[in-house]
Image (cartoon, rainbow, N blue to C red; front, side, top):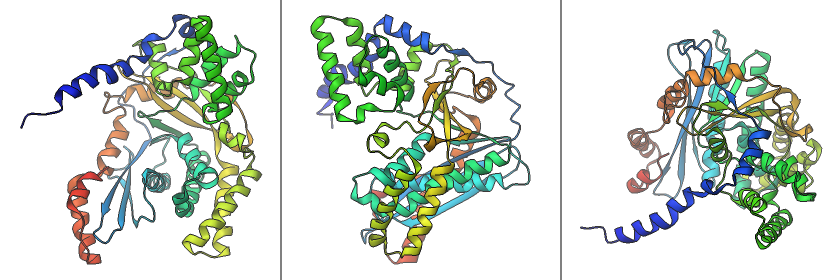
Length: 436
């Protein structure tokens, strides 16, 4: 049967998708020149590809099985691979989901990846570099938002798992630091706007004496806060009315949520391989600050209230409340700030790299600044050497992904065992839809 919607699809493709992807083409050249001046890119000098050294790479995969009795069964697994040892280190978690949503998968995936990484650091053959797929900053902040700030009632059910994720992340970083292991979190699919906002608000502050410009270049992200968002819209309307094209272009970029760090860095790089100077990121979450939770003491007070509420739902006692609070407290006081930078491989979009700034606690440091004095040339060269293309953006992380990713065949086999063990079957159609 012919596609009855093809004509509508083609029209929408022209009007919406192509139009949306062209948003970066309208950037005022003067704005781009100011951004490049603030953040000069550096040339990548590749290391020898065969010199893998003591690299360990960790990635995970997760899938969901919808049972006929209404339950969702989560299966999360992670693999750590390295030239130091022959077979991968494997971890697997299986659990009945107590709530729904993407947050559940993210939490379990982070836990199982941390477990695999911790085991890898216990190996007799010592690692020099630990690569973890994903964003460290996003992992920490999403866990804290879920524990202290989220209005999503369903996240209360995940309080113990969120606490464990935060603690295991801290434990992993602490163990790597004690062992002298460099930790690099690497992510290709990022929607972060930390560098974008720092640069654009810094440019804005040079043209405008306004609270929103000052707060915007010191915290991430003021767009989450209504009063600052409204002020930016007012400034944009005023610049459009007065015909000030530079200011209207600058403010439009700030407010455009589809313009991310990678899209801005791609424009800055103009197709050449390069990397940005590191961005130092402390406790600069604008919403955490706005709610008065930027100190470890205030954060823990909010977390305790959430853990106590969750105890009623999960039916655990006061001792468990204290234990969970201790885990979160150790994490909040011990998780370091982050050096974040972008590597642009030749002919590809940027990937974000995050390194712990050991010795500087994140939640005792309200600082967001470019740090050109921090040398990451060796790390950039190593990652460039193991880059194989847009799909295989890191050879070792790709190998870990191949081991850990769940295929449809894997889930079908797991479904058969779960059905036999529980006496209930799996929805076949839903199985295909819920693959990750």
